[in-house]
Length: 456
Ligand code: PEP
Ligand code: CO
Image (cartoon, rainbow, N blue to C red; front, side, top):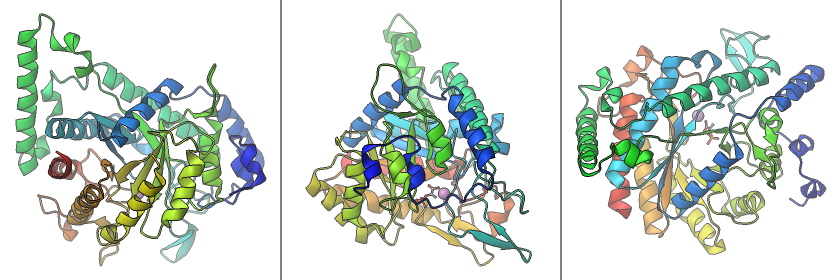
C-alpha cells in the first residue's frame, strides 16, 4: 500500500481508489451540489466527544471497561420517530445497566444509530415478481420500494440522512440530559410485554437492587445521590455507523481549531465492513486519515498478516482505543480461526480492542426464504469468543449486536422459544434480522455470566 497518494491524504483522496459497495451516482452535478451543501452544514458531534470515546475505549482494551455496541442493522428515514428512538435508547441503557450491575465494570455505550443508513449487499441485483432491480443499499443510497427510479442512487439522500441523523441525535441528547436515564426512576424502564419472561424477573430483581443502593446512598449523604454522584444521573451514548457511503463521511470530515488531524464529525465511531476492507480500497484510504475510533469487521477468511497491515495503516502510532477488531466468524468457525488472529496480534504487540459480533456469521434463510439467526448460535459464538480470548490470555472487551427495542420476530430462539413459523408475525427489518427487546435483555445477562466465568 505504498501508493503516492499515501503522503497526501485529504477527505476525498479515496476518490481515486477502487471502491466497492457504492454504485456510481448517475448525475455528477447533482452529486457535487449535495456534497458541497453537506460540507457546510454544522457538525453533528464534537471533537471532544471523539477524544473522550477513544479514551474510554483504551480502558476497554485494558479490561477496565466493557463496550456495548448495538442497534439496527439499517436505520431507515421512515423510522426516525419518537417511539423507535425511545425504545432503542431504553434497550441499550437497560442492557448496559445489566452489564454494569453483573460485571461491576463501567460500560461504554455505542449505538448503531444516527447515521447507520447504508448497507453492503452480497448481490448487485435482485429479482422481484419476475423483474430485476438494483438491490436496496440503505436509505443513504437508494430507496426500498422496488422500482427502477427509487433504486437509483440519489445524492439528495446525503442531505436527508444528515437531517435524520441530526434529529435522532437531538432527541437522544435531550432524553439523556433530562434524566430519562435517571436511576431514581426505574419505573421508566417497565415494558409490559416483558412481564411473563424469565429474564424480566432477573431484570426486576436488578432494578430493585439498584433502587436499594440508591436509597442507601441517599441515606448516607446529605445531598440527593444524583447531586452527590452526578455520574449516576447522566449516562452517555455514543454513535456509530459503517463508513460505507464515503461521500457522506467525507463531507462531514473537518478540521477543528487548535488541534491536529481530521475528525469525522458525523459520528463518534465508524467501522469498515467485511466487504470493503480489501488492502488498497477506497474505504481504507478514507479511514486512514481520521482521528475517530475505527471498527474493523473480521471474518473467517481474513488473513491475519493482512489484518496486521491494515491496522498498522489505520493506526500508525499504535494509539490505544483507536482500533476495535470486530470478529464476526460464525458459531461454527470462530474456534478454528480466532486463536491465530489473536496470536499474530499479540506477537506484533499491537494495541486493539477485541469485540465479538455474533450476528453476521450466523445468518441463514429458512425454507420459506426468510433471513434469520438463531439465538443459540449467537450465544454459542459469544461463549466461544470468551473462551478463546481467555485461553489466549487476551481480553474480549466488547459485543457488537443488531437489536431493537421493539417486539419484533426476526431471530429464532431465546427463552420464549420463538420458532420459524412465528417469524412472519412482526418481521420489520429492511435488512438483517435483529434481536428483539426480550432477546436483547436475555443476552445481556448471558454476556455478563460469560464475562464473569472467564474474567470475574
Ligand atoms: C453490518 O454490520 O451490518 C454488516 C454488514 O456487517 P459485515 O460487514 O460484518 O458483514
Ligand atoms: Co447487518
